[in-house]
Amino acid sequence: MIRFIDEHRDQFGVEAICRTLRATECGFITSRGYRAAKTRPRSSRTLRDEILVEELRRIHAENYSVYGVRKMHHAMRRAGWEIGRDQVARLMKLVGVEGVRRGRKPITTRPTGEPDARPDLVERRFTADGPHQLWVADITYVRTISGFCYVAFITDVYSRRIVGWAVSGNLHTAGLPLLALEHALVSTGASRGRQGLVHHSDRGSQYVSLACSDALITAGVSASVGTVGDSYDNALAETVNGLYKAELIHAKRVWESTEAVELATMGWVHWWNTTRLHETLGYRTPAEVETAYTHDQDSAPVAS
Image (cartoon, rainbow, N blue to C red; front, side, top):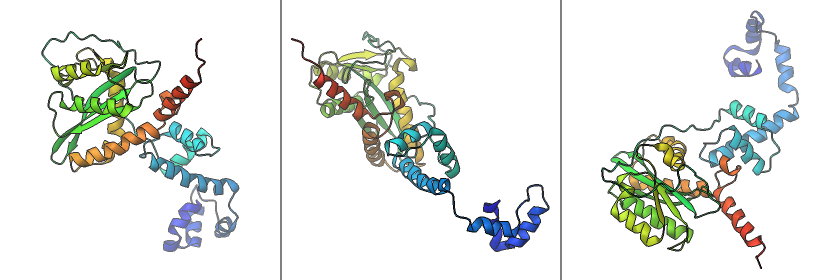
């Protein structure tokens, strides 16, 4: 009621609005009551809400404006605010802030007609005991003014860290996955020949090509591929693609060029690895998970 009068007082005047509202079922305030309400000191809850709203908007914007209630609740608490989940939900609704939802994943890898004897070493068990034991890979596309560009990601199953990625203006067989693989090997410091590292993908032609197979063998990485046409066999990689599209790509209506996509992707990957809270990691970041793992390994007693 107070807000309604505030919005229309310059046009109609307080007394006229109150007289009109008094004749309706919702009318209950007089002009004197309105002025008393406006001069009454604001409650401590109102004052705190104003501070929290500014922080909420800032944290939400700093995280690509994608967090829903649960992640915003954890993010606010990590920032030092004692705030409940219901209060976060109320304030987000008050200011019109909401999270993003993941859409359907487009098909980007092309099935190959050639037989492939490589096994499925994962069999939908997307778990690992530590970093650099299992990587999952997939490709997605982004529409630009000039056509399409393609983005390949390699994600570590244990920490959910994107260890390698690449962007290209074309989808030449093997070229894009090879760039992402090289980036993963360099960025992680994973020595070529690391014992037990598995690279899992679907059976798209980009991943079953001879060049990609040779690169994995040279790096000492075991190749694993899922079933043709079954998205569940590479579900984690497809989840990363879906979140990438929802959190970054779909937030902008038009992408000018492959270079613009590449620059934005670089920023998003850094945020994903170092800042974004992951529910599956207990609302921690991939960097925090890897740091905790290293600390636990360093602190473990040495067997005599």
